[in-house]
Image: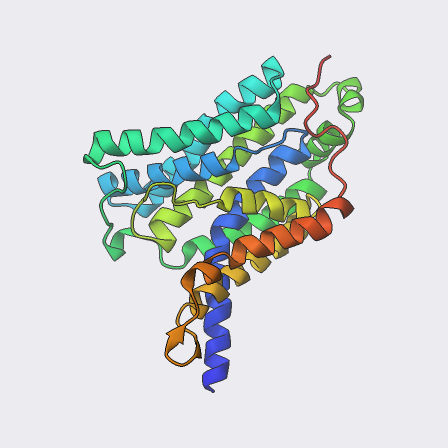
Length: 294
């Protein structure tokens, strides 16, 4: 019975810690299936985490906090989309710049609002989500699958990333499709950040994403830019994270626990292992990273 309860708790913990990755991976999928590389997922999540914590602190409503995070991710994506879609800037360089900008903006505004650049005030439990983000994240995965497979706009997005010239010949504006995909993807990445600060945690702390945006990108590549496989990859990374949390109290010899530094690298080690083993087998959209010039 104890083993059964341990497994149930591990699965529940896996779903919880996978929630930010699911939001970010689905957001990244929307952008990259349209042909726009989204290295900026890390920065979008970080900004969403801060805005969600601050908005929830002011409104005392996690729903409004999550909505504010979605809008923050969407607005932040406007700048990214402008540079990479309209100007044709290098998408890797622009995405990296957006990550660095978010890394600097969040402690800056935290210092202005709260007098501290390291964290925001802790939120009471009644001002935080309990289970809703998990169900919403899995719902988003299903909606993304329906969107990409069953809707005309999903077909347009696929053509924008594979054969943008054919989409243009059909009378559909490629840039407009890419704009919509990048903006919605940014909003979802913002929700991923919100689930960190007002669901898994009780506040925003500096650089709290800790590479989760890149893990979501790795899950997207591992899942071959498809919603369901990418979601399963997120669960794999979430499982490794849940395992490392429980291993921190394990004693291997005598009374000495396993060194926590070795345990905490487990999710990142799994990410590197997955990318090293499978990234060569994944075929990216043909027009991914290539600006469209009519």
